[in-house]
Length: 193
Image (cartoon, rainbow, N blue to C red; front, side, top):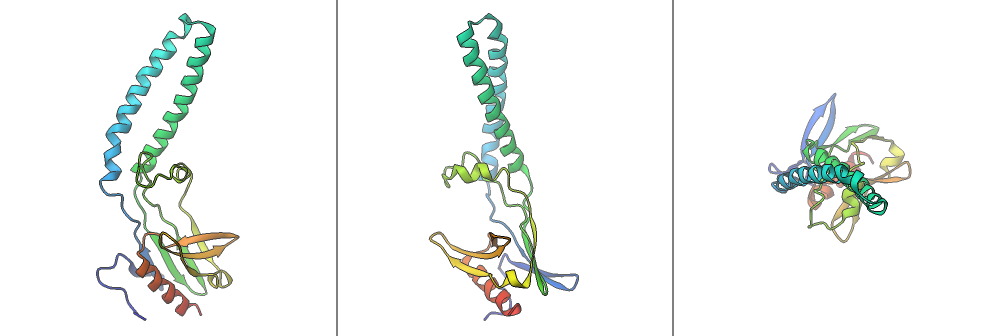
């Protein structure tokens, strides 16, 4: 087994309080992160303009149309709030994942992955995009019993390095390549067996 990472590997390591720590950067969205900003800003400006016109017209309209306009305003206000939340999440700075070997425990900081754009047609998984609005950075301390559940799972898309914690399956090193996940799995198994 390789005992150190290659020089060009994105997996960095350092020592913190005498414990080895791996730093795994998340995959960057690159320029795609910024392409959607002008569209979002333009959409919000147009939305505010149309909303003001619709609300100003309410006193002069019949009851049936007033109900429709009010329902439209409520739905589009919720859409606007969601869009602002996406915009805020997209502007947040990425924080890499960190795995610290704090024997007999294993510490994990999930970091903050780049937020996918709500207009990203590549993934086409809008469910995950909207659920990602609620995801927050998490810190875990895995016990020796939980470390025994460390597994490298081969899926259709790629390998997943996982560990079971309180009935949940936690993904580790999501930004790493398959080879790096495999190396990290072997390294952790060797150090915690």
